[in-house]
Amino acid sequence: MSEDLEISDFYGGNESRDVEALMFMQKMVSTEVSRLANLGQKSITLSVKNFSIVLDLNHPKYPKALNRVELKTTFDFDKVKKHLNRQYLNV
Image 1 (spheres, rainbow, N blue to C red):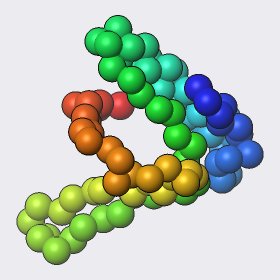
Image 2: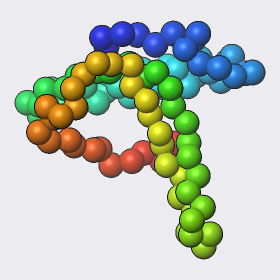
Image 3: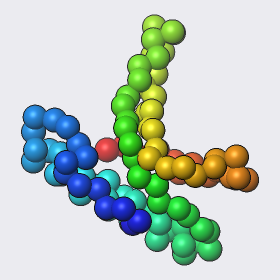
Image 4: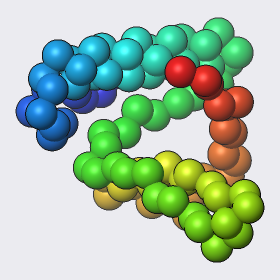
C-alpha cells in the first residue's frame, strides 16, 4: 500500500475492534491490488480522509445504507476513463 493505515486514523471506544477492522481492511486492499495486477490492471491506492455510512430513508419500505468515503488526495478524477467496482462482500 502507498500509505499504511494507523490505529490513530480511527476513532472509537473499542480499540481491539478498531485494530481488527484495520487489519481486515489492510488485508482486503492487499488482496484486491494483487487480484487486479494478476488481471493486468493498474490500480492506485488512495488514503481515506473520512468515511461514514449514510442512511437513505426516502423510501421507508426499502431504506438504503450508502458508504460515503472522502479521500485524502489531489488526484484529478476527471482523468479517470473507467471505474470498476468489485461485487460487495457480506462481512
